[in-house]
Amino acid sequence: MLTLIKNLRGDKAIWGIVALLALFSFLPVYSASTNLVYVKDTGTTISHLLKHGVLLFLGFMIIYAVHRIPAHYFKGLVLIGFPIVLPLLAYTLTVETQIGEVTANRWIRIPFIGVNFQTSTLASVVLMIWIARYLSKIRETTITFKESILPLWMPVALVVVLILPENFSTAAIIMVMAMMLCFLGGYPLKYLLAMTGVGLLAIAAFMTVLFVAPDKIPSQRALTWKTRIETFVHPESASADASRQVSYAKMAVAQGGLFGKGAGKSVMKNLLSQSTSDFIFAIIIEEYGLVGGLGLLFFYLLLLFRIVVVANSASTVFSKLLIIGVGLPIVFQAFINMAVVVELFPTTGQPLPLISMGGTSIWMTCLAIGIVLSASDKKQPEFEASNIDDTNPLDVLSGQI
Image 1 (cartoon, rainbow, N blue to C red):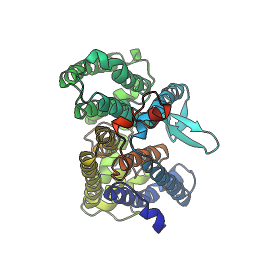
Image 2: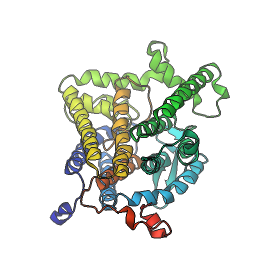
Image 3: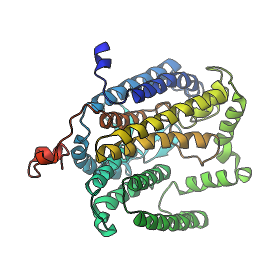
Image 4: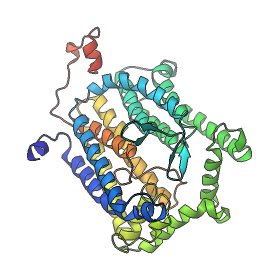
């Protein structure tokens, strides 16, 4: 074990933050899993806790394996990963899977191990690497919008379009993160502003159709989106069914007070249908109070701070963009999850990274953290431009062009 710890690379503060978040997650998951046992009659609290532990253990194995890969290799690996991700997203739209009370075309079943895999989470990580690779290549050149359509915006559009019909919130987050990474990567601001304007017009048109004629939108989720937005904007006029979960979450927050009821003493966990995932932050506040909620927020802010620090100190443009591209969405997702619980944001179905129970979200978060740690490792050798052979397939695979 000591040898394993000594071989850890990358930013030690990020290692510590991730480990603390993972260890803390056992408490709320064990407490909230009583909902799965006594309300939904699935397994036992110990079995759910063991499952969560196994998923986290495998997640940390992913971190360890990925963080040993030299960062520039991801330039080449993404050329293999992106053509795989697109067919997976398309196939996912044809597969209807039920998880708990939710039935949607978001997951595919992994054979033999019986785990549901949400392909959009993998697509998000791969797309951010793709964008970082492109932006690092054009960093010292003047680029026009027309020249960037095929290598940059077409991949972004394909991923977003394939995710949007069944997962609006994830598609929106990916688009926002892509635009932010392009801004930080030095993509011409005038093009980004123009795209933002077009995007706002498209959103306005979409919302108009959604509320006037939702049946015209070719997605079974259209009515769900409409209900969630209406509940957020006009909670007083929303139906009891539509506002029930948000109301329970707010009641949990209100009952938590300053110091909470204590570990395992939540009452609302038996009423919140997604108490182990989407609304686990409400259970944390109910049991640990405002102090516990702010403490958890502090660790996510600390993670954000370390991501910015290691990105700033990275030795190459690609490493800087890679750290921001895959690291920032982790914290952004955490903020959205917390905002939903306190009704600052419509219900989205985004889990709390490293805390919520689930397989795909944990593994893909760990994949992103492993990439951040790899890019933050200053001991890894950087290739020299003079050593690049653009006719050598090995140089292409290793990301040296």
